Amino acid sequence: MLEELRITGLGVIDDTTLRLSSGMNVITGETGAGKTMVVTGLGLLFGGRADAGRVRADPGRAVVEGRLKLGGTLGDAVRTRITDAGGEADDDGSVLLSRTVTAEGRSRAHVGGRSMPVSTLSELGEQILAVHGQSDQLRLLRPSEQRSALDRFAGPEHEKLLESYREAFGRWRSVVEDLADRRRNARQRSQEADLLKLGLDEITRVDPQPGEDDDLRNEVQRLEHAEGLRVAATLAGQALAGGVEVADDTPDATQLLGLARRTLEGQAQVDPSLADLAARIEEAATLVGDVSSELSAYLGTLDADPARLEAIYERRAALRGLTRKYADDIDGVIAWAEHAKTKLSELDTSDELLEELDRERQRLEASVAELAGRLTAARREAAGRFSEAVSVELAGLAMPHARVEVAVLTRAPSRDEPAVTVDGATVAAGADGADEVELRLLAHPGAPALPLQKGASGGELSRVMLAIEVVFAGAGGPPTLVFDEVDSGVGGTAAVEIGKRLARLARTHQVLVVTHLPQVAAFADRHLVVAKDTGGAITTSGVRIVEETERARELSRMLAGLPDSDLGIAHAEELLSVAAREKRAA
Image 1 (cartoon, rainbow, N blue to C red):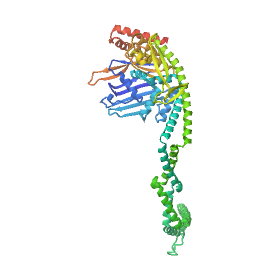
Image 2 (cartoon, one colour):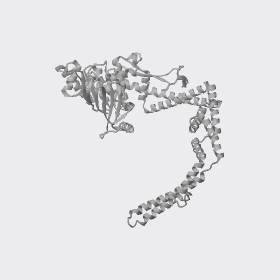
Image 3 (cartoon, rainbow, N blue to C red):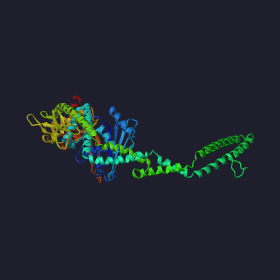
Image 4 (cartoon, one colour):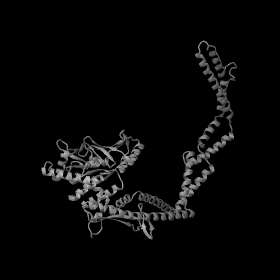
């Protein structure tokens, strides 16, 4: 869960820290005090889009820091992901996250003490946090989001089926496009293939070997300078091992080293350290002997062979012909040939290959159709369960006669999408199957089932959204849920029921609620108030925890705008008492 959130330099918030608890955390405050900035800060912390316009001019940057307490299987997975990325958890198992945004729009992220891409925060946020607000309600009105919601509810086995379908669909579309392209561009492909074959034939005739051009260059240099190399090696060998003809009495290196060794050994009894030097001279003499032998062997390899030199000249000319056409060096020529072989297989338009691809297309199309049919059946089965569960929750949210239906409709064929045959009917297939999913609301018995965007008012949509989230929570999901004024347009009994539902969610999740309803705030396990300070030259806001009488005064303010009203405080205390009783009974 999120233990602590610190926000600096964001909107009206100068510097404030929210200490959060497990259970239900409620955030209230006057309009314009900065409640929305708390949700904005959470969005930034978990990889949301950075808006430089929200950054305060002084100090010119906004910083949001959060401390995560990780536990359970999900905590282990998140901790492993952070460790793999180079971050570290603190000694108590918590992890510090940080996001900085400057007034110029630059953004930086840190996780576990290490600088990370912002995408890492987004990845963690998907596992840890789900934010629901007015924009999320609008998002739920889109058919694609409704289909995704049903797929999430259907469970892990359904998600595996959906992944299998997507994989088969991708392979099918790839084969279809490949086959169409080969047929459409057969002449162009054939011309390109002929050019590649000519190049490959030329390279095959020359048969270049890796690094051959460098090896031949070195060999030519030796052959062209064979006489000079022979003279140098001969003189060096004579100097080391004797036989220099300049003067017969000139000692060679071996003789001089032997004299030096014997001289030192003769005085080693006087100074024992000379014995070590004598031994080292003996090692040097051995090395000189080895070099002398190698020089003799080297002389045996030198051969000023004009025929060999001419053959190398011809070979290098053939290799240069290849490097002029295909690459800068021989290794590049060989790489070009390998690429050309691969490209030739891609350019193949032979009847045999086209028939093979067509058979593969038919096989994959049948697989896609079979999986699409199974997806449709699975969605319709899940739709019934989803509809029943959401309708039950709506009954508890003061909509006892309302019902949510989930319609799973097969998509009609169109020119823009491929088609498959499912159960004898031709349907359009997309990356997510052959279905359209539509949430419909029956507001009361006898009313027509209308799509949510047409059949739900603002308050009803808020309650439908909350009912869906309660159903989702029972099927798992992120451990921290944030609700940003999803109770907008709701009041009275429905507001109390929303508070009860949020409190029930808080038994298994950490819940953060930004609300203007005292009936919802009364159910909080921790109540935080965002307060505006207009005493200075610049308006700022801070967040504080309220308890006991302070909490009753805040609820009184929310009820009647009169925090010190005795009647308002009495009403607030009654609300708190009712909420506590409901939480104990639940």
